[in-house]
Length: 73
Image (cartoon, rainbow, N blue to C red; front, side, top):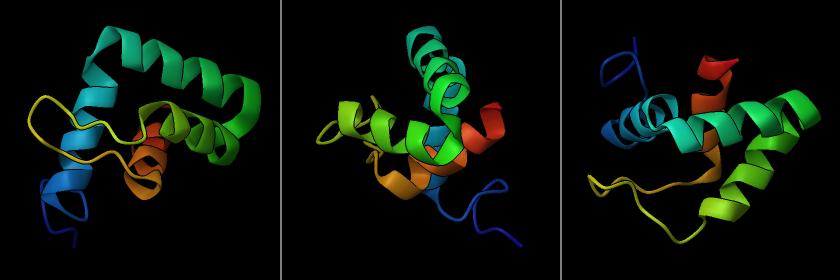
């Protein structure tokens, strides 16, 4: 069983929450995943977000971005 609302951690849940509910992030994630697939799309999305945090303080990392993008597609 996942540790936090169906996700591995609070951070994973928070990143997923923002990628799935912020229109700009969502559209970009769908665009990248559709064009490149989940794995490469997640790497590209992570590169765009690297060093940034969600407004709630969640850290964008490759694992959480990839998990969130799997939920989107």
